[in-house]
Length: 210
Image 1: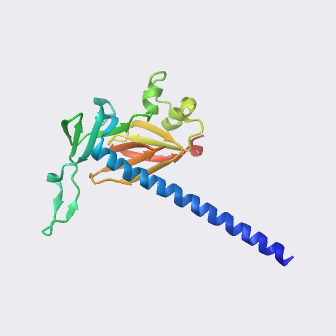
Image 2 (image 1 turned 135 degrees about the vertical axis):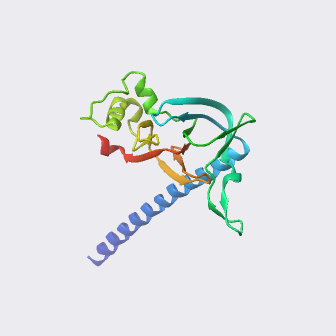
Image 3 (image 1 turned 30 degrees about the horizontal axis):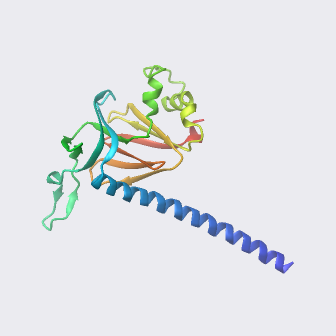
């Protein structure tokens, strides 16, 4: 009886330790992916697409490149008398195939090759201007794109600065990170990098939308 109880407790402890170890490995992998991504961006560039949008989520421009690097223009960072940054720069500096691009103000998304914007795909066969308020916009997107969201656990809805839906991405493993650029967030979606600047966003578990 005592031996059986000890065995059950040992098994329970093993399961708890295994779960903690798995969580640690997953977290470490996402952190490693993010750090590796920064190195990749600095030394090799990214095969990605940069798109900017107005406040109504209309596309302004689109630039695709196989060697894209992104960072903050530190000339616009505010520093104290000791040289410490008290407010990060909100001015973006890019190199695209060796050419320079600077951006500030309007919403911008940089998506690494391999990520699919569900809003863009949905718009090919459905009307984005559908004003049926009985079904929330994000639910229409997810339900209308089941072939792209099957098996996915997390959905990211990105909105313009005025709150209008702009882009949507999904993945099994989604992490987000602070960047050195003001009003921006970096995401890792199933190992692919997504950079969002001056946008609102919400991350949902897909089961909430079904």
